[in-house]
Image 1 (cartoon, one colour):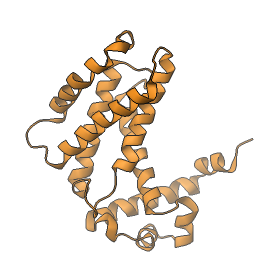
Image 2 (cartoon, one colour):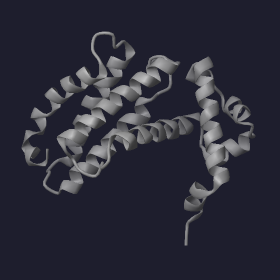
Image 3 (tube, helix red, strand yellow):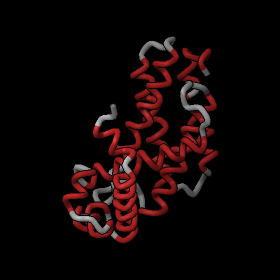
Amino acid sequence: MQSTTEANKLDPRVIRTRRDLVASMFSLLKQKTFSQITVQQIAEGAIVNRGTFYAHFDDKFDLLEYMVKDSFQKMLDVRMASRETFSTENLRLLTLATCEFLARFSDKYGPCHGKDHPPIERQLQPYIYQLLLKWLKSAEMVDSAETIAMATSWAIFGTALQWSWGRKEVSAETLTDQIMSLITPGLAPIQPLI
């Protein structure tokens, strides 16, 4: 038997309402800074009431987290056939996807920093960390998986975030190569995995 949460994920009305709320938030982000956007404005843009908004999300930060994770997940699905294993190729694809995702977000909504901009780091970096941790734990040969995943996720995310603010000097591919050249030697103890 499905739980209520699982049933809601499959319910076309839930899917449609979430899609409309996401579209409303994206539209508002093109017009205003994140700090200026209210739940009421998001709900009105999706043509639902505030109660419906709160039935799906706790607040605008929860909606942003959903948007970021869902968009990034879709980007990874297109790029990676199998994200179940820790490999140099998967690490490179994850890094490139992070660079390109942050660049697109920054191009559409302005730099992902400052008090008036969406706090994207609270959504994306933990997601990258969890994915790396899953890879490392599934390998069962790695000590300190949490530390390795934490350091690697911040190296990828932090560098890509700063680059996305004013990336005029190098392409996403070049930056990915530079990040990989920095983190790959640190992963030498688990070289058989990569």
